[in-house]
Image (tube, rainbow, N blue to C red; front, side, top):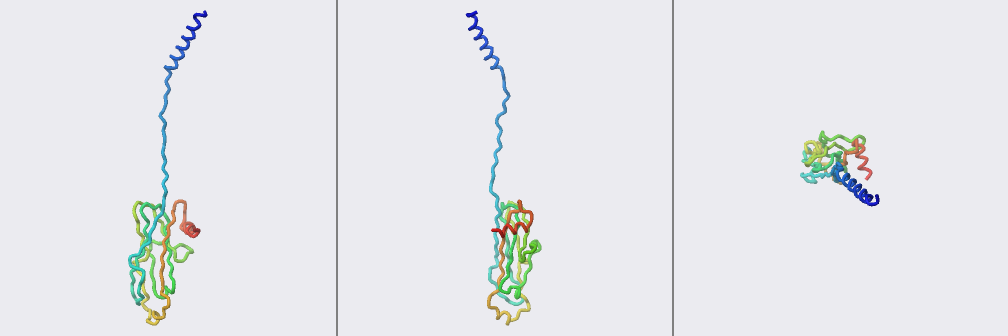
Length: 177
């Protein structure tokens, strides 16, 4: 029995090795997903091609073509324009805002529109007919009495609309900064 014990151990080892060599495992190759996070933005520009200085001539229609461009690749946004008149502007001139702009409730001189994200530049004109009208009834005396020239200022702003549900909320975000 002492001589057969090594043979039994060898036979058992061969049996174990042979059996384990015939066992197959199903293995799936590893799978992965790669995520890339890029930075979004809102980019605008405000331009006017008709200049910045105008002569007050009674009854004149003055070309004034301010336009806001929402740049290509910008995220969807709330787009605003703020129009400030100073130095008696309303005594001499009038204008209208294009119908596409909505007055912001409770904020004088501020108008907005919702803009979808896009891969192209989009231009939004501000003044109806691109005009400012000088009052027809201005007299020479009124014009000569001007000591400080009337001014009209337009400022453009944009806030992403993702996560900002109303224009009022977007405007409050602008005023926090």
